[in-house]
Image (cartoon, rainbow, N blue to C red; front, side, top):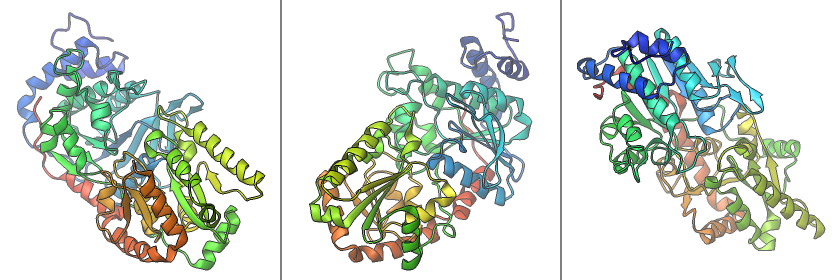
Amino acid sequence: MPLGRETLHPNTEQLVQSIVDGERINSPFVASAIFNLARIQCESFSKETIVRQPPKVALVIPYHPLYEIGGLEIGTRKLAQGLKVLGHHTEIIAKGIYEHSDQRGTQISPEGIVVHGVGAGIEDIISYLLKRRSDFDIVQWMEVFPPIPETPETYNDKAEQQYLASILLRTLGINTYLSTATSGSITRRGVNQITWQSSKKHQPLNALLNCAMTGYIGANSDIALEYSEAGLTKPQMNFEMVPFGVDDEHFKPCSKKEKQHIRTRLGIPIDKTVILFIGRFVQRKQPDVLINIWKTLPLDIQEKGYLVFIGGGAGQGQPDSIYNEVCIQIDNYNKQRITQGLGVGIHIFNKVPHDQMPTYIQACDSFFFPSTREGLPLVIPEVMACGKPVFASNIPGIREVISDPEIGIMFDPNNPKQIRDYLIDFISNPCKYASFGKTAREHVKRYWNWHSIASKLSNVYCKPNKLHTV
């Protein structure tokens, strides 16, 4: 039953039941009641919270990891698997209803992790978490929930509800963590930094984020600076860098003979130097830029090379999707080559199951990734683990992986000439870069394996935390 004005000082159970019954957590009266309740419990908030060892964990993600298959979704599944191996009971909770698909209910991921598809978004997920509040010690939000539509002008009431839920969960004795997988998510989704100080409409989001979580986790160290840029200090004080990792026993090099067999099976020319791009066809990853650069290469270089795209279809329906435009680009390029008596020069594999991805990487010779914004793209250590040279943007997140000039080459994503020069040089002389792949694999095996990553996160969960007061 929704709370009424007659319930001036609702207790925790009354608040929980009201939200479970359908009242929005960010309705004025409920939000105010949550803050009042948190202030009453301020003393306990400031003490160290001790949880069951090992704690039971809910990883909450905006996108269903068995339906939308990108780096965040795969990383969440692999992280859950690593935590499970360490003894944590771990479940994934995600959006369940899509325009063209119903993913509601419980499924089991290929890694053996329970995945719950819940409703159409954050509202239903919060109700579900509160119903199952006795089942979890930790709730880790895997990303800031995006506004609808996802534009700079849209006030993010989804994140507002996410932060309010975290405060309420903390009053129930559950530790909450906000994980950020992509650079820019805090400033683009998580706060309203431009006008919030002068606009009452935009103040709540920043005030909430400053106190909502037990701790804050980012895929790279630059994400901590985003809180500072938004004028928030508490998240910076309790920030841990925990990136995604890679299964180096699954992602591994293959022999030349095996590579030829794979290419024949996939329809990739055996005699070409194959350049690979893996990622959604969205604006920030710039697949269109890579194609435009490719079209300017000397004809003899284009003849020696072959460009392969994987995963473009995963970007369909996203706010910054350029899937249709990129497909038209590729189709027009290939048609022009055919009219000139040449063969197809660009190939798309729209959606490849993650367990098959090593085969596709093994078929190629190098990886080019001109993205302008990432957290820590999982695909880069995966390509490195397969022993392939990586050419990628010099941006936060990627710099965390390519931390040494001997394990990869970085370029300015806004400098087409620099990217073009690297393409020409690699296609002309791929042997020149062979050592990069070997060194990169050893680096990934040592620093980016999933066991190490999951162990680091488990340590974050299990150590005493000084919780932020509200």
